[in-house]
Image (cartoon, rainbow, N blue to C red; front, side):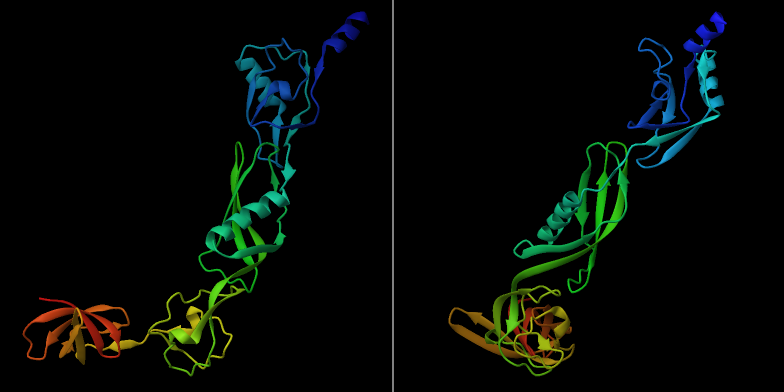
Length: 291
């Protein structure tokens, strides 16, 4: 009786479920060994990712003890031990700051306000967590934006997409006058105002035409304008050359088509001699040099 009681007292028991907070599992994390027991640091392999579990069989433990030449007689083990990895939820403020940084980089001179962030249900490690966010290639601020957020912990990384609503206001070109379809935008038709960003704005409207009738107050975005071909290959064009206060013009032939600002080759009507010229208007170019 006394011997049985002593043996029972010396038996070490392992629970059926254990929660750990480390990257790897040791036998000491499953069984409460005395501090000087050589079996405590015996490695049992990887720990599951945060929020997940791993099942370790009794035979795995006894097999590793036997291979290490360590005793298992005094251990009382269930058939399986379920090992859980400690986890925490996402920090809303940390995610919001990362998303705000991404929008601020995209719109550096704008006023950016994050109005809502829909966090997915994600479990992460309890240790330090680094976050970075990036925007999709094409952003439509009139709708929700799905921002890619990268999570990096001590032993894991993953990506998730966070549905975000945001207000962005910036100085943008706004029409002062009504513009008829296929008419050229003039500098005095535009004023720069602080307005909500809804699309890609036109940084330089010179030479561009309206795709349709435009009303005062509209922000000039790229979808409203187009750049026409001012010169077609084979056209007779006027090429101007300026030296000081003197400007001379010559009629030449375009060797390529071009839009406003393009540089193309032109040739004399006789076919002898070519020059490089910049398109500055309909069938009008500025000479950049002869060949």
